[in-house]
Length: 158
Ligand SMILES: [Zn+2]
Image (cartoon, rainbow, N blue to C red; front, side, top):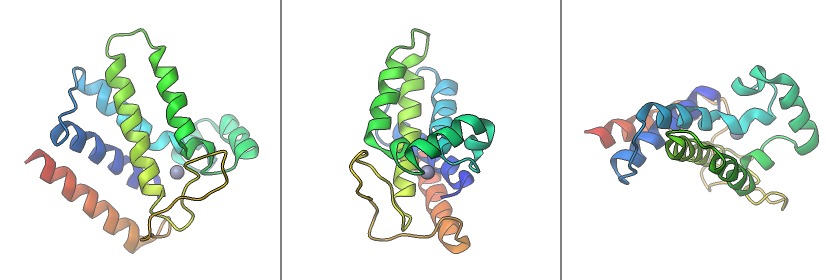
């Protein structure tokens, strides 16, 4: 999926998790900011992505070593982010961690809706995807996904 779809996915995941699943957030700004960041950070392995363009050296390095949609789209990445954010000793660290993880999970779910899928179990070379998929950048497919995400977001706050 494209960056704007992932951002909408991160917003939807953050809103739905606080409204429907009763995730308690103390620092709302930290939580939502982290969720939006988490929704795009897995594509750091793609130099032309939103986040990849911000850090081209790191992006090219990750692409060369691991490839696209591999380690940064895996459970291993979620564990790494969990471990790193456990080291945070600042106020609101739990909200930052929860937001990042929710944003990353939303990214993985959305990319699993593409024909290429993700390598969720990296380093195992197995692509994981949903039975229903849409191509990245497909106007109809991504618009449909955005409408669904927006609908769920609005319904969760009503
Ligand atoms: Zn991705």
